[in-house]
Length: 305
Image (cartoon, rainbow, N blue to C red; front, top):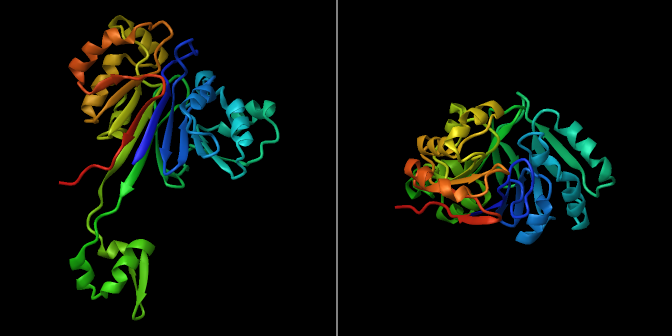
């Protein structure tokens, strides 16, 4: 299972009742953070999942509301006792930007390992058990959407094992260890497993226009966290000019991508009552919800029929 927390829902600037948009994922006690604007560590402290276990921080783009909270957070991670290297993923130029920010956070007790998403970058990026896919968004600056996948192997197939004449005492070992030796031959787990089962996928996209590549990237995910900068339909031109989305555009993308659930986030500071636009959004995509500060969900592997 995968725990997901939307740490904040604001765009541009933090508000008295609205932190800046970021997402925290927890898997078997380890943490992955996407975006870190001003005040992100405050809402993380309120959540209570800790800091030391953050193994990777993904940055969507280099606007201040998505990255300016890094110096303080990195100091807090160090003060929590982390000494292991921490990976940081983001657009080309990430290392230069972070090194500039961390002038005010010197002598961290851990190394930062940078993965800049150029054309040669791995996709997915694997950090521990996290498998993190990335896709170029459509914003004013270079920006990436992210998707965390938890894959699930197929079930043990007795017929395959019997056809290989693999002794029963080795059946448990091959599933646990991945491979076994028998009579001079090597047998791998893939040789005795069925088709892979449906896993868990969570996608996060902000800031962007609703382009087709993003829709394909998020297709079928259990949870799609997507920006909805404006609720008002008359702000469509403004959304186009600033490369953001309306609530309705995010809802149509969720519908066309056949996602299971949509959380809207990254609200404009001028959007005081986003809930008034939710009924219209649900006419497009009934499983849409408004993001809330520290809104949390535990996603289980799909049940098998």
